[in-house]
Length: 112
Image (cartoon, rainbow, N blue to C red; front, side, top):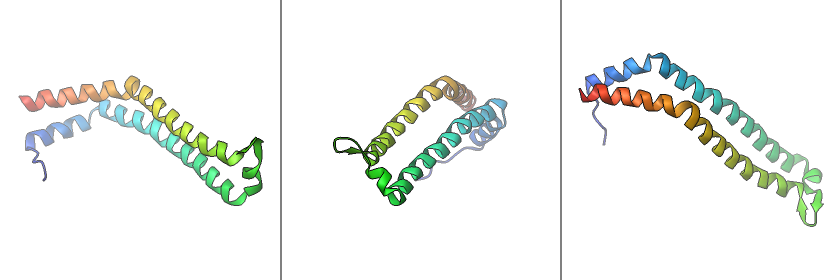
């Protein structure tokens, strides 16, 4: 089921899309997401590559039966949750106020 968009709603969206606030929202979002996505993918690929080609290093025991591979694996989860927390804080401080303002403008114009 496709929601029909009125010409007025589309025109208002186009107007908001052309504003500086929308450009700032997009720049702020991409400025956070792109570098962190790249960093996390490099970190993940390091783990995968080390698991395949640095098996002696990954098998090195640190404490008891805990080896480097296990620590790296657990750090993947820690990193994921840390990035999600960091994004939530960043978003609530930087992007959410702009997005809320733009949504309010859009809704006010559409209700007229």
